[in-house]
Structure formats: C-alpha cells, structure tokens
Length: 248
Image (cartoon, rainbow, N blue to C red; front, side):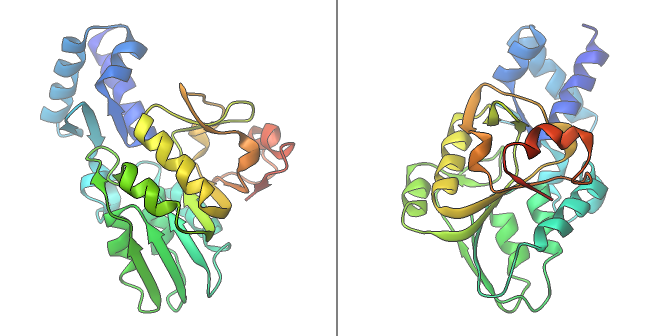
C-alpha cells in the first residue's frame, strides 16, 4: 500500500472513531510499528490530527467548540435532534463522550430540568450552560485518546446508580455481532454504563453500521434505541429492525 493510501486510511479511521491506536493500525495495514509512527507524525506535521501516547486523536476532540473540525457534523446534528426527543423533564440521564454526544447536548431544550451523569469533562462543560440541569461528572482516570474518565473507580461508581436512559456513541455496530470496540478499557466501561441504565440509546452515523471490531460490548438486543441520520425505513437499517430495536 502506498503512503498516501495509508494516510487516507488512517484519516478515515480517525474521522469514524475520533481516535486510533498504533497497535490496531499495525494489524489493519500489515506494516511495522515504525511505519505507523512515521505516518502519524507526518499527519501531525500536516495539522490533520493530534498524536498521543499509543495512537492519535481527531482534531475535533481538542477543539470541541470549533464546529468546523467535526467530521460529518450535518449528520450528527440530525442524530442529536432525534435523540433530544427521548429526553423529558425529571429524567436522570447518563452519557459517554464524543462529538455526537456533544452535539446532542447543544440541542437540548433551554429550560430542560434533568440530572445528567457524564464521563466526559467536555460534555460536563456544555451541560453546565443549562441553568436547570444538575451535572454530575463521574471521576477517575482520564483517557487522553477517548477524552473520558475510565477505570475501576468509574465502574464502581456506575454500579451504584440506576439512570432512566444512557446515551453513548459507538465505534461499530452490526445486526449480528452487536456493539463492538477495539479498546479494552472502553469496552468494559460501556458494559458498566449499560448495566447502570434502564434504557439505552446508541447515537451512530451510518458509516459505522454493519462493522464488527474485535471486542464485544453487548448483543444488539441489549440496545433500546438506535439513532442514525437515516430515515428509519432506510434499507441500510433493515437488518436492525428485526431485532426489536426502536430505530429513530
């Protein structure tokens, strides 16, 4: 594979998942770790991403208030507006992080009265702009790549709560394989989030549909709502409707 092709592949992974791990790129591209490190450094020098320990991060994570850097922002706005229809006064809600969740927070009704638990400091800052929303940031180790808190302390706190609704993004979703990820810590965290919730909603751009990664989070039947930018009757969603998921 030519260098430009590798760079294009890396940027597509960054745009889809907001982060990439060097170890994953080595396997996916079948090249050496030194090659990936050089590729990432060149992309950093071009101003296309941020390099962090063990991988790289989308520029949108470090400039969350600069909407021009958000990949597929128009699609994420559509998803965010659909997701707000699930939120009612008096609810207790749990969120992960990511650009789609941030967009969801920006679309909330101005006078909403609710309680939000979140693992993301960036999401907490956005939620704090609402006068009638109580914001509880769950603390723990901080992931520089995912921009959320994680670890045993976080999972312990999640085991002590039961929320009405959990909203999370995903790296991949498949009608047979369910929700999957590549990061062990994030995988365990998402399992704990689902266990802490009466209902769950996955916010997902359509490019992540029908993809399966190596670590399983949960079967598709464990999800209450799948929210994409597509019309709910779109053919791309046909395989998900038979799983009794509410598609928005």
